[in-house]
Picture 1 (cartoon, rainbow, N blue to C red):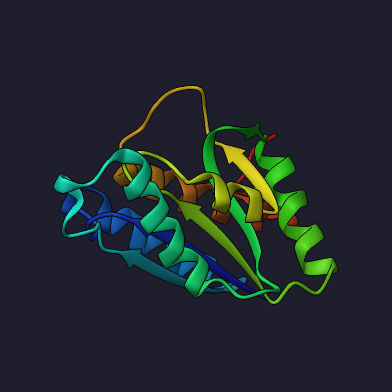
Picture 2 (cartoon, rainbow, N blue to C red; picture 1 turned 30 degrees about the vertical axis):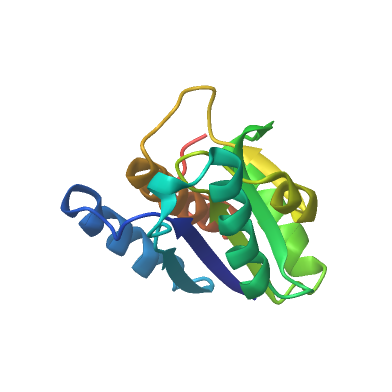
Length: 157
């Protein structure tokens, strides 16, 4: 099974880049990981929020495969413990999912069509984080989930 992290926005800022790279390298010891940073729309300043979200959704929907398990990071999603995230990943592996795609939406969130396509909507917190930090938190939490699945000592209970 592969894991993909997709994020709409700018490339990794220097202050998170090394952490994201470190956790990505660690995840690769368990699952093949791929990152895709989708550039923000060039003409967004002239668009409505709805049109921006719809255009971003169209881009994502053109990239997603029918059998991908899509986890949309959304503030209205379900909050999970680290153990529950590990369980979610294990369930995907058990169901022979070829790829789990974790999607971090654009500045205005994720369009309804993508949320409907998502197999699961996950909220990291009730707090609002900058997208750059969400990438780092996501990478660390997926790595933590991998160590939980292998009963390794990184995660202390």
